[in-house]
Image (tube, rainbow, N blue to C red):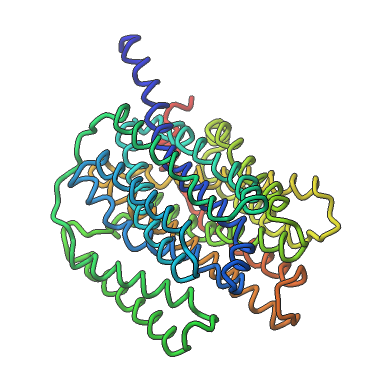
Length: 470
Protein backbone atom coordinates (compact mmCIF):
# COMPACT_ATOMS: atom_id res chain seq x y z
CA UNK A 1 0.00 0.00 0.00
CA UNK A 2 1.46 3.39 -1.04
CA UNK A 3 2.10 6.24 1.38
CA UNK A 4 -0.49 8.33 -0.50
CA UNK A 5 -3.18 5.66 -0.04
CA UNK A 6 -2.37 5.32 3.67
CA UNK A 7 -2.51 9.11 4.13
CA UNK A 8 -5.81 9.38 2.26
CA UNK A 9 -7.33 6.61 4.38
CA UNK A 10 -6.15 8.34 7.56
CA UNK A 11 -7.68 11.64 6.45
CA UNK A 12 -10.99 10.00 5.58
CA UNK A 13 -10.96 8.17 8.92
CA UNK A 14 -11.14 11.59 10.59
CA UNK A 15 -12.73 13.97 8.06
CA UNK A 16 -15.94 12.08 7.30
CA UNK A 17 -16.80 11.37 10.97
CA UNK A 18 -15.98 14.95 11.98
CA UNK A 19 -18.27 16.44 9.31
CA UNK A 20 -21.10 14.05 10.13
CA UNK A 21 -20.55 14.96 13.77
CA UNK A 22 -21.64 18.53 12.98
CA UNK A 23 -25.21 17.30 12.74
CA UNK A 24 -24.86 15.15 15.84
CA UNK A 25 -23.40 18.16 17.65
CA UNK A 26 -26.46 20.20 16.73
CA UNK A 27 -28.85 17.50 17.93
CA UNK A 28 -27.00 16.86 21.19
CA UNK A 29 -26.64 20.58 21.87
CA UNK A 30 -30.37 21.02 21.33
CA UNK A 31 -31.25 18.16 23.69
CA UNK A 32 -28.91 19.31 26.46
CA UNK A 33 -29.94 22.97 26.38
CA UNK A 34 -33.61 21.94 26.41
CA UNK A 35 -33.15 19.64 29.40
CA UNK A 36 -31.45 22.43 31.36
CA UNK A 37 -34.27 24.86 30.52
CA UNK A 38 -37.25 22.58 31.27
CA UNK A 39 -38.17 24.07 34.67
CA UNK A 40 -38.14 27.64 33.28
CA UNK A 41 -40.09 26.65 30.16
CA UNK A 42 -42.68 24.94 32.38
CA UNK A 43 -43.13 28.16 34.34
CA UNK A 44 -43.38 30.28 31.20
CA UNK A 45 -45.95 27.94 29.64
CA UNK A 46 -47.82 27.60 32.98
CA UNK A 47 -47.59 23.82 33.14
CA UNK A 48 -46.31 21.12 35.51
CA UNK A 49 -42.55 20.47 35.08
CA UNK A 50 -43.21 16.72 34.92
CA UNK A 51 -45.55 17.38 31.97
CA UNK A 52 -42.55 18.84 30.13
CA UNK A 53 -41.31 15.28 29.72
CA UNK A 54 -43.60 15.40 26.66
CA UNK A 55 -41.18 17.87 25.06
CA UNK A 56 -38.45 15.22 25.39
CA UNK A 57 -40.43 12.08 24.65
CA UNK A 58 -42.33 13.54 21.66
CA UNK A 59 -38.98 14.03 19.94
CA UNK A 60 -37.87 10.50 20.80
CA UNK A 61 -41.26 9.22 19.64
CA UNK A 62 -40.84 10.80 16.21
CA UNK A 63 -37.36 9.30 16.01
CA UNK A 64 -38.63 5.82 16.80
CA UNK A 65 -41.41 6.05 14.21
CA UNK A 66 -39.34 7.25 11.26
CA UNK A 67 -35.91 5.77 11.94
CA UNK A 68 -36.96 2.35 10.54
CA UNK A 69 -37.33 3.99 7.12
CA UNK A 70 -33.97 5.78 7.28
CA UNK A 71 -31.87 2.89 5.98
CA UNK A 72 -34.18 2.32 3.01
CA UNK A 73 -34.27 6.06 2.23
CA UNK A 74 -30.47 6.25 2.28
CA UNK A 75 -30.18 3.27 -0.07
CA UNK A 76 -32.93 4.57 -2.37
CA UNK A 77 -32.08 8.26 -2.65
CA UNK A 78 -28.43 8.37 -1.56
CA UNK A 79 -27.08 8.80 1.93
CA UNK A 80 -25.59 12.24 1.32
CA UNK A 81 -28.83 13.67 -0.14
CA UNK A 82 -30.99 12.27 2.66
CA UNK A 83 -28.52 13.53 5.27
CA UNK A 84 -28.66 17.10 3.94
CA UNK A 85 -32.47 17.02 3.78
CA UNK A 86 -32.63 15.77 7.37
CA UNK A 87 -30.49 18.66 8.62
CA UNK A 88 -32.83 21.12 6.88
CA UNK A 89 -35.97 19.61 8.43
CA UNK A 90 -34.37 19.63 11.88
CA UNK A 91 -33.52 23.32 11.47
CA UNK A 92 -37.10 24.18 10.46
CA UNK A 93 -38.38 22.31 13.50
CA UNK A 94 -35.98 24.31 15.68
CA UNK A 95 -37.45 27.56 14.37
CA UNK A 96 -40.95 26.29 15.15
CA UNK A 97 -39.89 25.35 18.71
CA UNK A 98 -38.62 28.87 19.29
CA UNK A 99 -41.96 30.32 18.15
CA UNK A 100 -44.11 28.04 20.35
CA UNK A 101 -46.45 29.65 22.91
CA UNK A 102 -48.14 26.55 24.34
CA UNK A 103 -47.12 23.05 25.37
CA UNK A 104 -49.06 21.61 22.42
CA UNK A 105 -47.23 23.82 19.93
CA UNK A 106 -43.89 22.93 21.49
CA UNK A 107 -44.65 19.20 21.33
CA UNK A 108 -45.69 19.42 17.66
CA UNK A 109 -42.55 21.40 16.81
CA UNK A 110 -40.44 18.81 18.62
CA UNK A 111 -42.08 16.10 16.50
CA UNK A 112 -40.94 18.00 13.40
CA UNK A 113 -37.42 18.13 14.80
CA UNK A 114 -37.67 14.40 15.45
CA UNK A 115 -38.59 13.67 11.84
CA UNK A 116 -35.39 15.40 10.76
CA UNK A 117 -33.37 13.73 13.49
CA UNK A 118 -34.73 10.30 12.55
CA UNK A 119 -32.88 10.52 9.23
CA UNK A 120 -29.98 12.70 10.35
CA UNK A 121 -28.37 10.52 13.02
CA UNK A 122 -28.67 6.97 11.61
CA UNK A 123 -27.91 8.05 8.03
CA UNK A 124 -24.90 10.01 9.26
CA UNK A 125 -23.69 6.94 11.13
CA UNK A 126 -24.29 4.86 8.00
CA UNK A 127 -22.07 7.23 5.98
CA UNK A 128 -19.28 6.66 8.49
CA UNK A 129 -19.79 2.89 8.53
CA UNK A 130 -19.61 2.65 4.74
CA UNK A 131 -16.53 4.82 4.54
CA UNK A 132 -14.57 2.92 7.23
CA UNK A 133 -12.91 -0.48 7.42
CA UNK A 134 -14.06 -2.59 10.38
CA UNK A 135 -10.57 -2.56 11.88
CA UNK A 136 -10.86 1.23 12.18
CA UNK A 137 -14.47 1.29 13.32
CA UNK A 138 -13.88 2.01 17.01
CA UNK A 139 -11.54 4.90 16.16
CA UNK A 140 -13.95 6.28 13.53
CA UNK A 141 -16.89 6.16 15.94
CA UNK A 142 -14.75 7.97 18.49
CA UNK A 143 -13.96 10.74 15.97
CA UNK A 144 -17.67 10.84 15.15
CA UNK A 145 -18.77 11.25 18.73
CA UNK A 146 -16.11 13.61 20.12
CA UNK A 147 -17.51 16.74 18.39
CA UNK A 148 -21.02 15.46 18.98
CA UNK A 149 -20.22 15.23 22.69
CA UNK A 150 -19.31 18.90 22.72
CA UNK A 151 -23.08 19.42 22.63
CA UNK A 152 -23.61 17.95 26.13
CA UNK A 153 -20.52 19.85 27.34
CA UNK A 154 -21.52 23.23 25.92
CA UNK A 155 -25.29 22.73 26.10
CA UNK A 156 -26.02 22.90 29.84
CA UNK A 157 -24.02 26.08 30.60
CA UNK A 158 -25.07 27.68 27.31
CA UNK A 159 -28.73 26.77 27.77
CA UNK A 160 -28.63 27.87 31.39
CA UNK A 161 -26.97 31.18 30.46
CA UNK A 162 -29.46 31.91 27.68
CA UNK A 163 -32.44 30.93 29.82
CA UNK A 164 -31.29 32.89 32.87
CA UNK A 165 -30.08 36.08 31.18
CA UNK A 166 -31.99 36.18 27.86
CA UNK A 167 -34.96 33.95 26.89
CA UNK A 168 -35.36 30.20 26.49
CA UNK A 169 -36.55 30.58 22.85
CA UNK A 170 -33.00 31.36 21.77
CA UNK A 171 -31.89 27.86 22.78
CA UNK A 172 -33.60 26.59 19.62
CA UNK A 173 -32.60 29.36 17.26
CA UNK A 174 -28.87 28.80 17.85
CA UNK A 175 -29.30 25.59 15.79
CA UNK A 176 -29.75 27.53 12.56
CA UNK A 177 -26.14 28.63 11.87
CA UNK A 178 -24.91 25.17 12.86
CA UNK A 179 -27.34 23.59 10.38
CA UNK A 180 -26.19 25.89 7.57
CA UNK A 181 -22.54 25.02 8.30
CA UNK A 182 -23.36 21.30 8.31
CA UNK A 183 -25.14 21.46 4.93
CA UNK A 184 -22.19 23.32 3.35
CA UNK A 185 -19.58 20.90 4.74
CA UNK A 186 -21.56 17.84 3.62
CA UNK A 187 -22.02 19.27 0.11
CA UNK A 188 -18.33 20.12 -0.29
CA UNK A 189 -16.44 17.34 1.51
CA UNK A 190 -18.60 14.21 1.81
CA UNK A 191 -18.08 12.02 -1.26
CA UNK A 192 -20.88 10.26 -3.11
CA UNK A 193 -20.65 6.84 -1.52
CA UNK A 194 -21.61 3.68 -3.39
CA UNK A 195 -25.35 3.10 -2.94
CA UNK A 196 -26.61 0.22 -0.87
CA UNK A 197 -28.67 -2.61 -2.31
CA UNK A 198 -31.91 -1.38 -3.93
CA UNK A 199 -34.81 -3.12 -2.25
CA UNK A 200 -38.57 -2.70 -2.23
CA UNK A 201 -39.84 -0.52 0.59
CA UNK A 202 -41.63 -2.62 3.22
CA UNK A 203 -44.78 -0.44 3.33
CA UNK A 204 -46.84 -3.05 5.19
CA UNK A 205 -44.16 -3.33 7.85
CA UNK A 206 -43.91 0.45 8.17
CA UNK A 207 -47.69 0.73 8.68
CA UNK A 208 -47.35 -1.80 11.50
CA UNK A 209 -44.20 -0.73 13.29
CA UNK A 210 -44.62 3.04 12.82
CA UNK A 211 -48.13 3.38 14.28
CA UNK A 212 -47.36 0.55 16.72
CA UNK A 213 -44.38 2.33 18.22
CA UNK A 214 -46.25 5.64 18.16
CA UNK A 215 -49.26 4.28 20.05
CA UNK A 216 -47.21 2.22 22.50
CA UNK A 217 -44.82 5.03 23.40
CA UNK A 218 -47.61 7.61 23.54
CA UNK A 219 -49.51 5.39 25.96
CA UNK A 220 -46.44 4.98 28.17
CA UNK A 221 -45.72 8.70 28.07
CA UNK A 222 -49.29 9.76 28.91
CA UNK A 223 -49.67 7.24 31.72
CA UNK A 224 -50.18 8.98 35.04
CA UNK A 225 -50.82 12.38 33.46
CA UNK A 226 -54.13 14.21 33.61
CA UNK A 227 -54.27 14.75 29.86
CA UNK A 228 -55.77 11.33 29.08
CA UNK A 229 -58.19 8.87 30.70
CA UNK A 230 -56.92 5.48 31.91
CA UNK A 231 -59.02 3.80 29.22
CA UNK A 232 -57.37 5.86 26.47
CA UNK A 233 -53.90 5.15 27.87
CA UNK A 234 -54.66 1.42 28.01
CA UNK A 235 -56.08 1.43 24.47
CA UNK A 236 -53.02 3.19 23.07
CA UNK A 237 -50.51 1.02 24.92
CA UNK A 238 -52.17 -2.33 24.21
CA UNK A 239 -53.10 -1.40 20.63
CA UNK A 240 -49.55 -0.34 19.94
CA UNK A 241 -48.18 -3.52 21.49
CA UNK A 242 -50.50 -5.59 19.27
CA UNK A 243 -49.20 -3.85 16.15
CA UNK A 244 -45.60 -4.41 17.25
CA UNK A 245 -46.30 -8.12 17.78
CA UNK A 246 -47.93 -8.24 14.33
CA UNK A 247 -44.81 -6.68 12.85
CA UNK A 248 -42.61 -9.29 14.52
CA UNK A 249 -44.57 -12.02 12.75
CA UNK A 250 -44.55 -10.07 9.48
CA UNK A 251 -40.78 -9.46 9.57
CA UNK A 252 -40.02 -13.19 9.38
CA UNK A 253 -42.32 -13.68 6.39
CA UNK A 254 -40.77 -11.17 3.98
CA UNK A 255 -37.36 -11.27 2.34
CA UNK A 256 -36.30 -7.72 3.25
CA UNK A 257 -38.23 -6.36 6.25
CA UNK A 258 -38.01 -2.72 7.26
CA UNK A 259 -36.28 -3.66 10.54
CA UNK A 260 -34.60 -7.03 10.16
CA UNK A 261 -35.20 -8.95 13.39
CA UNK A 262 -33.04 -11.77 12.00
CA UNK A 263 -30.08 -9.66 13.06
CA UNK A 264 -30.81 -10.85 16.60
CA UNK A 265 -29.47 -14.26 15.53
CA UNK A 266 -26.00 -12.67 15.61
CA UNK A 267 -24.75 -13.08 19.21
CA UNK A 268 -22.88 -9.78 19.43
CA UNK A 269 -25.79 -7.81 17.95
CA UNK A 270 -28.35 -9.51 20.23
CA UNK A 271 -26.32 -8.84 23.38
CA UNK A 272 -25.57 -5.26 22.35
CA UNK A 273 -29.27 -4.69 21.66
CA UNK A 274 -30.58 -6.14 24.93
CA UNK A 275 -27.80 -4.96 27.23
CA UNK A 276 -27.48 -1.58 25.56
CA UNK A 277 -31.23 -0.93 25.77
CA UNK A 278 -31.29 -1.79 29.46
CA UNK A 279 -28.29 0.42 30.20
CA UNK A 280 -29.71 3.36 28.22
CA UNK A 281 -33.03 3.06 30.05
CA UNK A 282 -31.14 3.97 33.21
CA UNK A 283 -28.76 6.52 31.72
CA UNK A 284 -31.45 8.18 29.60
CA UNK A 285 -33.21 9.46 32.71
CA UNK A 286 -30.30 11.65 33.85
CA UNK A 287 -30.79 14.66 31.51
CA UNK A 288 -34.39 14.82 32.73
CA UNK A 289 -33.71 14.32 36.44
CA UNK A 290 -30.61 16.40 37.16
CA UNK A 291 -31.89 19.85 36.04
CA UNK A 292 -35.16 19.28 37.91
CA UNK A 293 -33.34 18.33 41.11
CA UNK A 294 -30.83 21.18 40.93
CA UNK A 295 -33.39 23.87 40.07
CA UNK A 296 -36.60 22.74 41.83
CA UNK A 297 -34.99 20.69 44.61
CA UNK A 298 -31.92 22.76 45.45
CA UNK A 299 -33.10 26.19 44.26
CA UNK A 300 -30.30 26.78 41.75
CA UNK A 301 -30.76 28.97 38.67
CA UNK A 302 -30.76 27.44 35.20
CA UNK A 303 -27.24 28.79 34.66
CA UNK A 304 -25.96 27.32 37.94
CA UNK A 305 -27.59 24.01 37.08
CA UNK A 306 -26.01 24.00 33.63
CA UNK A 307 -22.58 24.76 35.08
CA UNK A 308 -22.90 21.54 37.08
CA UNK A 309 -24.45 19.11 34.61
CA UNK A 310 -21.97 19.97 31.84
CA UNK A 311 -19.45 17.84 33.76
CA UNK A 312 -21.19 14.69 32.53
CA UNK A 313 -20.60 15.66 28.91
CA UNK A 314 -17.01 16.67 29.63
CA UNK A 315 -16.30 13.26 31.13
CA UNK A 316 -17.94 11.55 28.18
CA UNK A 317 -15.79 13.46 25.70
CA UNK A 318 -12.58 12.63 27.57
CA UNK A 319 -13.34 8.90 27.45
CA UNK A 320 -13.63 8.89 23.65
CA UNK A 321 -9.86 9.35 23.41
CA UNK A 322 -9.12 6.33 25.59
CA UNK A 323 -11.87 3.84 24.71
CA UNK A 324 -9.81 2.04 22.06
CA UNK A 325 -6.75 1.25 24.25
CA UNK A 326 -9.00 0.17 27.12
CA UNK A 327 -10.85 -2.26 24.86
CA UNK A 328 -7.55 -3.43 23.37
CA UNK A 329 -6.22 -4.20 26.83
CA UNK A 330 -9.21 -5.96 28.41
CA UNK A 331 -11.62 -6.84 25.58
CA UNK A 332 -15.30 -6.10 25.10
CA UNK A 333 -16.79 -8.68 27.48
CA UNK A 334 -14.77 -7.70 30.55
CA UNK A 335 -15.05 -3.94 29.93
CA UNK A 336 -18.80 -3.94 29.28
CA UNK A 337 -19.63 -6.20 32.23
CA UNK A 338 -17.51 -4.48 34.87
CA UNK A 339 -18.17 -0.98 33.60
CA UNK A 340 -21.97 -1.51 33.63
CA UNK A 341 -21.73 -1.98 37.40
CA UNK A 342 -19.44 1.02 37.84
CA UNK A 343 -21.62 3.29 35.69
CA UNK A 344 -24.73 2.10 37.53
CA UNK A 345 -23.19 3.21 40.83
CA UNK A 346 -22.52 6.67 39.45
CA UNK A 347 -26.09 6.88 38.14
CA UNK A 348 -27.25 6.11 41.67
CA UNK A 349 -24.83 8.54 43.35
CA UNK A 350 -26.94 11.76 42.97
CA UNK A 351 -29.36 10.14 45.43
CA UNK A 352 -26.89 11.26 48.12
CA UNK A 353 -26.64 14.87 46.91
CA UNK A 354 -28.17 17.58 49.08
CA UNK A 355 -28.32 21.36 48.82
CA UNK A 356 -25.36 21.43 51.23
CA UNK A 357 -23.15 19.06 49.21
CA UNK A 358 -20.09 20.98 47.94
CA UNK A 359 -20.49 21.93 44.29
CA UNK A 360 -16.99 20.68 43.49
CA UNK A 361 -17.80 17.21 44.82
CA UNK A 362 -20.99 16.98 42.77
CA UNK A 363 -19.15 18.10 39.63
CA UNK A 364 -16.44 15.45 40.15
CA UNK A 365 -19.05 12.70 40.62
CA UNK A 366 -20.94 13.76 37.49
CA UNK A 367 -17.66 13.97 35.53
CA UNK A 368 -16.53 10.45 36.45
CA UNK A 369 -20.05 9.16 35.80
CA UNK A 370 -19.89 10.68 32.32
CA UNK A 371 -16.58 8.91 31.71
CA UNK A 372 -17.98 5.50 32.61
CA UNK A 373 -21.22 5.92 30.64
CA UNK A 374 -19.32 7.10 27.57
CA UNK A 375 -17.12 4.01 27.61
CA UNK A 376 -20.22 1.84 27.81
CA UNK A 377 -21.95 3.60 24.91
CA UNK A 378 -18.87 3.52 22.67
CA UNK A 379 -18.12 -0.14 23.31
CA UNK A 380 -21.70 -1.39 22.96
CA UNK A 381 -22.32 0.67 19.79
CA UNK A 382 -19.20 -0.71 18.10
CA UNK A 383 -19.88 -4.26 19.29
CA UNK A 384 -23.31 -4.27 17.65
CA UNK A 385 -21.71 -4.23 14.17
CA UNK A 386 -19.01 -6.82 14.78
CA UNK A 387 -20.76 -9.60 12.83
CA UNK A 388 -22.92 -7.51 10.47
CA UNK A 389 -22.00 -7.79 6.79
CA UNK A 390 -22.08 -4.79 4.42
CA UNK A 391 -25.41 -5.76 2.85
CA UNK A 392 -27.22 -5.45 6.19
CA UNK A 393 -25.52 -2.33 7.55
CA UNK A 394 -28.51 -0.09 6.72
CA UNK A 395 -30.95 -2.33 8.54
CA UNK A 396 -28.60 -2.82 11.48
CA UNK A 397 -28.10 0.94 11.81
CA UNK A 398 -31.86 1.56 11.77
CA UNK A 399 -32.50 -1.27 14.24
CA UNK A 400 -29.85 -0.01 16.64
CA UNK A 401 -31.06 3.60 16.42
CA UNK A 402 -34.69 2.60 17.12
CA UNK A 403 -33.63 0.67 20.20
CA UNK A 404 -31.64 3.64 21.48
CA UNK A 405 -34.61 5.99 21.20
CA UNK A 406 -37.01 3.45 22.70
CA UNK A 407 -34.76 2.89 25.70
CA UNK A 408 -34.25 6.64 26.23
CA UNK A 409 -38.02 7.15 26.14
CA UNK A 410 -38.50 4.34 28.64
CA UNK A 411 -35.84 5.93 30.87
CA UNK A 412 -37.56 9.32 30.93
CA UNK A 413 -40.94 7.68 31.48
CA UNK A 414 -39.57 5.60 34.38
CA UNK A 415 -38.07 8.73 35.92
CA UNK A 416 -41.37 10.63 35.63
CA UNK A 417 -43.26 7.68 37.16
CA UNK A 418 -40.71 7.57 39.95
CA UNK A 419 -41.13 11.27 40.73
CA UNK A 420 -44.92 10.99 40.72
CA UNK A 421 -44.72 7.97 43.03
CA UNK A 422 -42.31 9.79 45.37
CA UNK A 423 -44.73 12.72 45.55
CA UNK A 424 -47.49 10.34 46.66
CA UNK A 425 -45.22 8.73 49.26
CA UNK A 426 -43.63 11.87 50.70
CA UNK A 427 -46.36 14.37 49.87
CA UNK A 428 -45.97 17.85 48.46
CA UNK A 429 -47.82 19.66 45.69
CA UNK A 430 -44.58 20.50 43.90
CA UNK A 431 -41.25 18.75 43.45
CA UNK A 432 -38.64 19.11 46.19
CA UNK A 433 -35.30 17.52 47.08
CA UNK A 434 -36.91 14.68 49.05
CA UNK A 435 -38.57 13.26 45.91
CA UNK A 436 -35.38 12.46 43.99
CA UNK A 437 -33.21 9.91 45.91
CA UNK A 438 -35.44 6.88 45.29
CA UNK A 439 -35.64 7.69 41.58
CA UNK A 440 -31.85 7.89 41.18
CA UNK A 441 -31.55 4.58 43.02
CA UNK A 442 -34.05 3.00 40.62
CA UNK A 443 -32.31 4.15 37.41
CA UNK A 444 -28.92 3.11 38.78
CA UNK A 445 -30.16 -0.41 39.48
CA UNK A 446 -31.74 -0.68 36.01
CA UNK A 447 -28.46 0.29 34.31
CA UNK A 448 -26.41 -2.07 36.49
CA UNK A 449 -28.67 -4.95 35.50
CA UNK A 450 -27.31 -4.75 31.94
CA UNK A 451 -24.14 -6.45 33.22
CA UNK A 452 -26.08 -9.75 33.18
CA UNK A 453 -26.38 -9.44 29.40
CA UNK A 454 -22.83 -8.32 28.68
CA UNK A 455 -21.43 -11.19 30.75
CA UNK A 456 -22.75 -13.54 28.02
CA UNK A 457 -20.59 -11.99 25.31
CA UNK A 458 -18.21 -14.29 23.47
CA UNK A 459 -15.04 -13.47 21.51
CA UNK A 460 -16.91 -12.39 18.33
CA UNK A 461 -16.52 -8.64 18.87
CA UNK A 462 -12.85 -8.84 19.84
CA UNK A 463 -12.05 -10.88 16.74
CA UNK A 464 -13.75 -8.51 14.30
CA UNK A 465 -13.13 -5.09 15.85
CA UNK A 466 -9.79 -5.57 17.62
CA UNK A 467 -8.12 -7.68 14.96
CA UNK A 468 -5.02 -5.51 15.03
CA UNK A 469 -4.30 -6.41 18.65
CA UNK A 470 -1.11 -8.38 18.95
